[in-house]
Length: 593
Image (cartoon, rainbow, N blue to C red):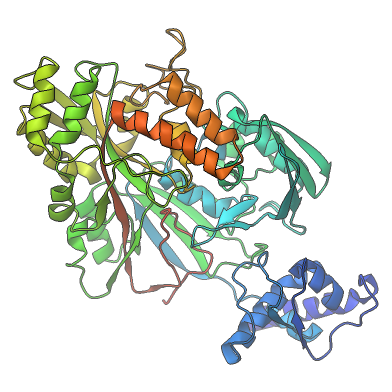
């Protein structure tokens, strides 16, 4: 190992020294290191080219600056090489020091993560659900990502500009390679978007993107059909795909062995057993510290907890709230406010939920505060509409509160004075919530039969409209009204056309999977469309406020709660922090043994 490290070190020193003739300025290669103050429009790649002879040496400048910060807090902390600000104090190492920083320690150790369900795909085109996103986000990169504070930051693109109100011009990071060694270039962006625009894509990209034009290898324009104010909230979801590799292996080959530019490479997927990834030591953002990542699907709460306590897994998601105060020594609980809205969806085209009075009665019959206190250990807050207060476009709509007498009155008006029987579908982690809801509904005469189903079976039932009611959640990490309303309350969501003729609505089509509650309203559509294409933020808010008022009044949901994301990990896992969007990012994490 020492001989290999020395060999790599000497190779890099030789390479750095050999790059002297290729300097972009007459400045000599740094010999003893120096400080540098960031100027307007600076970027680390150009600084590295100027002072160290090669843009890829930006990694050394970032590492050296962070090391200096440990000694002197006046130096900057660089978490993302794309994000440096004018006035920041950097340290540019000498050529020899740069070579040392470029030789990263080899990744070591293994982390096992238990989620409530397996991934649904390895092809980003068909991505569904946070469990799948957690895997794909480690294998693929997007043009922009969200940092741990949910700020949208440059990633495979270093910047963007708007030549006009419909054009988004992205400048791509140079030196990025896919796991197979191919260079990431503008044609890959065009290819990725082209796939997302196809009819069978799970993405709604086709609703707002018109076309993609390659300007040169590292510049690409994405042109929208109309001005689209929420555009950047969608960019973070586009996982860049290698056009050459995809065409070489085909759709099935790509789905069975995906290749991205991310910090981890795909190794193996045994369906419903485990997903194995390994570190990408050549990652443009620096090699991960963990060598192997294994995802295991464990739906049952008790089984996930047992696996954690015995050491079979190192990190578990969806921790039951009552476990927070019971975790034993060696297990650490971590929580963060989440971005998911939990709700009881009602199929508005099935009796008795085709009557708005019944749907309103359901909201009055449920005591959300009691569920939060007694079942969720206080780790949640009630929601009054589909949006969270932090989302752009939110307005308070305090229409419903716990009022069983009001619920009974509405049921009587609708022709159900003695209540009715219904079925409530959900998955194992939400069993206790579903049973609590059933208990409350029984007090107003509604008898709910709770069906506990595995995630895949549940989705296959409620997405095409086969569930009478279903308990689930929807995340809105975009923190924008468009991210929620266009996906759940817009009649043309995905490939459905809920206001279209029979056969086009999406009802019963398991491949489309976009029917959900079946709710559609042409007036709501108009407000959602206007909010998306209007650039003026105040006018956008007005449109979304009007849409929300109608949605809450017609209430295809029973609005429940927004919980904290709760994780439990073994203390051997270090450097990992939870995120409010529930993504498990491991770029900076390590294990101690």
